Length: 323
Ligand code: GDP
Image (cartoon, rainbow, N blue to C red):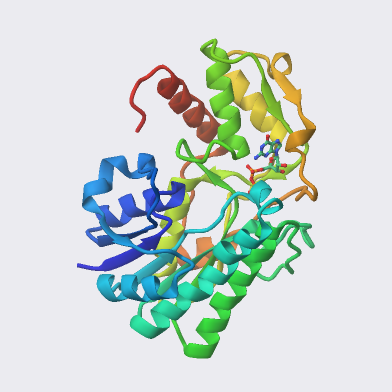
C-alpha cells in the first residue's frame, strides 16, 4: 500500500486528491492545523478514511514529525494562503505560508524521508503580466501580486531542491481550477453562488470587480489527476496544466445566469472594492507537454463546469445534499 501525505487536504484540491488516492488504494495522511473552528466541509465524506496529523506549515519541527509519522512515498504540498486579493492586505503572512513554508516542507522531506516524491502546487499567477500568449513551461514569469511573487519562490525552491539534492520534486503550474468546493471568495464560485441565491429569491444583486480579465478555467477534479501523474514518471519535471481555452469574467457571468434563465445585466453591479491594485489581464495555458508526457486529458469543459457549479449551489441553498 502506497502512503501519501497531503498538506491543504481540507481545501478544494486536497479533497479531490485525497478521494483519488483513496480510490487508488493509498493510505492518505492529512496535515491539519489546530483551530478552534475546524472546517471539514470538503472532506466530510472521507474524514474517517484520512489519517490526521497535527502540524503547522510555519513550524518545521511539526513538519519533520509529520513526515516521520506518515513515512510517505509521495508528498503533495497544497497548503498556502491561496487567495490573490488577500495577498495585498496580508503580504507577509502570504510570504510565510505560500513561499517560505515550501522550504519548510522540502526540508522536512529532505531530513525525514529524502526519497519521497514531492509535488509543489505552483500557479499560473506566476506568469502575471504575461510575456507570451499562450504560456508554456519556459515562458518568463512576471508576477503581479504578493501571492504571485510568493508562488514564484515556491516554484524555484522546488526546482532548486531537485537540482541541489537530487530530490524527486515536481512543480505543477496549474491554471485556475474550480469546482463546487471552490472557496466562495473566488470569482467562479462567487458568481455561481450569487446566481443560485438570486434564482431562489435570497439575493437581488451580485457585486463584482473587473469583468474584462480573462482566465483559463478548468475543473479541479481533472487537475488533481495531473498532480498524481507527475509523481508517477521516471524523472521529476515541471508541467503546465490548463484547458487551452480562455474566457472573460463577463462570459463566466453570462453563462452562469443563462443557465438559470436570467439576464446578468439585470443583477450585476460593479463595485470598485473588488478591483485589484494590479491585475492579471489574461491567462492562457498550453499544456501540450503534459498531454504528451503524462498522457493527461481534460474531461469537463467550461460550460459544463459552470453549469455543475450553479446546480450544486442551487441544491445547497435549497438545503439538499451536494456531492
Ligand atoms: P485568481 O485568478 O487566482 O485571482 O482567481 P479569482 O477567481 O480570485 O479572480 C479571477 C479574476 O476575476 C481576476 O482577474 C479578478 O480581478 C476578477 N474578478 C472580478 N470581480 C471579482 C470578484 O468580485 N471577486 C474575485 N475574486 N475576482 C473578481
